[in-house]
Amino acid sequence: MTGITPQRIAQIEARFAELQAMMASGDLDSDKFVSVSKEYAEIEPVAEAAAQVKSLRDEQQGLAEMMASDDAEMKAMAADEVDGVKKALAAAEHALALQLLPKDSADERPAMLEIRAGTGGDEAALFAGDLYRMYTRYAEEQGWKVEMISANASEVGGFKEVVANIQGKGVFAKLKFESGVHRVQRVPETESGGRIHTSAATVAVLPEPEEVDIKIRSEDLRIDTYRASGAGGQHVNKTDSAIRITHLPTGLVVQCQDGKSQHKNKAQAMKVLAARLYEQERDAVQSEEAEARKSMVGSGDRSERIRTYNYPQGRVTDHRINLTLHKLPEIIEGTALGELIDALIAEDEASRLANLDG
Figure 1 (tube, rainbow, N blue to C red):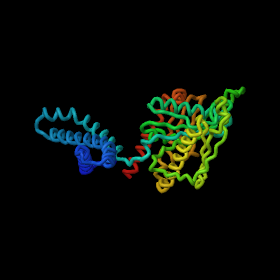
Figure 2 (cartoon, one colour):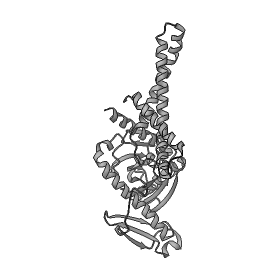
Figure 3 (spheres, rainbow, N blue to C red):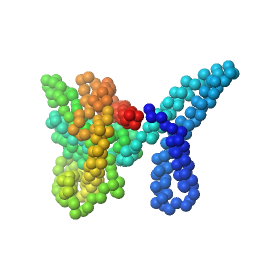
Figure 4 (cartoon, rainbow, N blue to C red):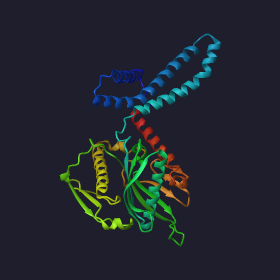
């Protein structure tokens, strides 16, 4: 691991102290106060991690001096503590190195979750429904709020396509590695011969942009209204409340018919459109870093097969990190999904630390 020099720690401490003094001064105008507060919130955990490393290094130095002493009792006391401090220091330096890794500016953002049934017909739609419930339950465990934006329900259950907005802290950081093709192997309920079928669904997780990130000009949009279809009672089928927005420069098309009002459907469709345009911009910026994105956890390419859910064997395998968990029921219920997500995040962090060392 890259050594973090005392000079680097001193720089962190100095900047943290400077920000503290600026916030306490009472001399900042509102805009400056907001920017300083944001930087303070970002650097505070880094400064705490740096202080821990500094303290443990000082303690290690003190123990080394005790070990060099002629006093046998002092040596014995130091010897009892050396290993513990060494392990604690290694953990603290690792934690600080993680804090110093370049941050994805979108990590703390809410996100749009899009799930589409792929190959496999009705079974793929049922699986897309299973995935949607899995993410909804996981989100509830995290204290996030999920709002369905649009859905194209299948006649047999599940979804041909479903789009949801997930609000909360660090949503994109946790869910960004879920983008890709999810494959299921199981015996469909309609299969009388007991044969295992393979179906798939595609998941896309898009960070929600802030207003300053994306400017959408009204003249670049074609907005069509139409009569909503599907279940939902008399109201759904009698008013032209459904909205279709076409972004003319890119050809992106977004539809929303879930809300009962045309106004709400338009607002929701605009949120989805903004997220997709933001993702296009991010992809363009990051294309130069393609090799860095093709880390151990994959490129984020939605056509990449990332995970298999094998029901007969009760296992879930993530192909990017070769991790298999025999906890399929708990994962599909959302309660054990965190184990997979945490493993992916840890692998990504390890890969990025290795790149820094290289």
